[in-house]
Length: 382
Image 1 (cartoon, rainbow, N blue to C red):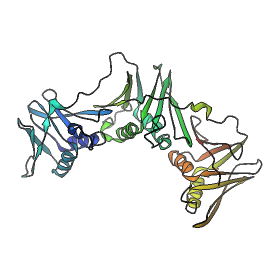
Image 2 (spheres, rainbow, N blue to C red; image 1 turned 45 degrees about the horizontal axis):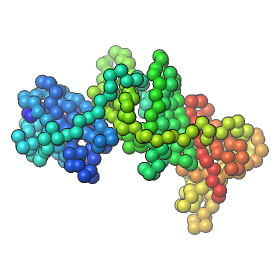
Image 3 (tube, rainbow, N blue to C red; image 1 turned 135 degrees about the horizontal axis):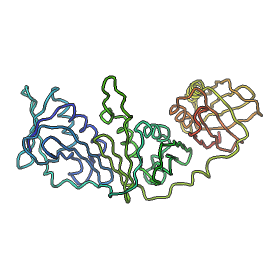
């Protein structure tokens, strides 16, 4: 294999592969990135850990075809150190690969593995149901729910995000057993229906894919172009996300997600409207003095005011208050402050509503201006 390519394009794709390439695998090939020539002007890069897989294409001036697998970590470190401009890549018969910067003496040699040893990547079956979604919408779904995914990998049903689409409604729900986040959006046109459980590691990679400027559509000056789309396909036990020249696939979790609709309180009789930024600032300040073990704070409601207090036998007490739109009876409930702060940080509305029923009942937090989102936070005894 011999070709010349742009450093910035190679660096972008190699960086994108890092989260998928498995550095600690017992199979050495999984810590590698596959470089494979496809046609006279295309190089494809791919990485997989056998559960997640990602591939992307870039332009290259190909002199000789072929493929090679190179250490993802080593390749990234060396490409970063190359001067800007073209890089010449040449592979020998023993998979030893040379990177040479054009117009510079800088050169690296990497000990590679034959590209034929790299495991094949999955592909969706023809005719599998596909949803076309704006990339920004997928990014919003992830941003507003991912914080509530459990990090306990032994509880697969909670270490995942539930992604559903039914007709023109797309929904994402997450929970770790102490809190729940749900957001749904309406998409144009009639869409297929599917339900999938996406593991946390894949959700994090999807967030990076949404944030990657290389996945965006280049905009010509003075011309309107449609927003970038991601095509989501469920095929067998896998899901595929395609945007721009990148395809990301994930083996879905085979588990039963909790019946989330039963967790959402109905008909809470105490609804408080309060400024989001002031509420978050007060929570953050009072939680500094909360117990390090529980992070618990007390929210005390009374007409026109919400008082926030914390008590710690080790570090003392904290107190603050926020003016609120509330005229109901007094009520005090304990919560983990971090759970509220995570929700408030994911929102951008100026005002939020807090719905509660009793001291032992969960609270529901919603942005006043966006009824498609809600978060449920379970109370705690303090």
